[in-house]
Length: 319
Image 1: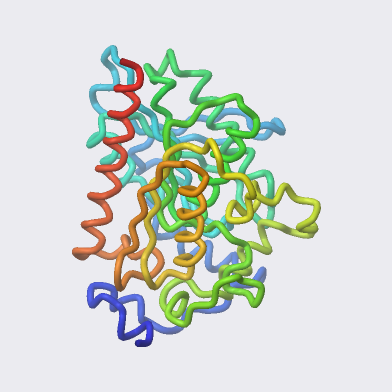
Image 2: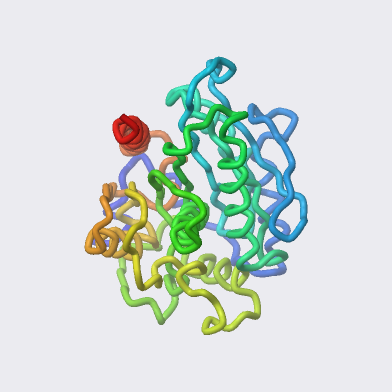
């Protein structure tokens, strides 16, 4: 069957044609169009604060606290990393979602407004996320954060950065991450190119296309040679050693360009002795959860259930 025949009817809006090619010339207009759909910082429910990143530049974080966060207690914290192909986006793109998730879980969420490629190529976005992780641990007492309940989470490119962040945290040995929640993560710089180890005629046809994916990876890499990069930090799918990474939740649509790389990553995590929960949603393209429907509802429930289990597991481990 062809991708269009496999598409869940709830996602028919993804069939709308006319998306332009992603290039350095079209990127400003794409950014402007997409960012116009987000809340302004003044309208957002998150609390903005500024810290210094690893290179001394300003880095914005957005805090989402449940109403009970003013009381004494030890809160789980989710370090959230937004999507946007490494080249666009900000925490406000998920503002309502993050505010409601913080309340639902009674957890504190810290969203990172990392600097974007191509103006800020690898490793700057990743180092911004690592700086934010360090800030969380440095402020665990003032925020009433339980250091044993720090979770990293992201969507798409943000999930790719979350996966890379977990690898960096393991390699550097400074901070311990309780679990990672990766929602259709962008993990393999080869996807959408002839160099991809998997070719699937039903993925990447609807939704996020190969051309845009390759453009975004090129923006992140800039003029750096792959041999000069710490490849697993750049493209987590190519990380050789996945041992000792945190328990992982991974979800992806069956029609997503990232299906093959995500399932392969989950299997490799499992073989490395990492606890893995993997969900593949039928008939779902990339970013399917932006469209209401039964599959999106199921995905939202699965994410919340996994997060609650991770928080409860940390509590059990403390006991």
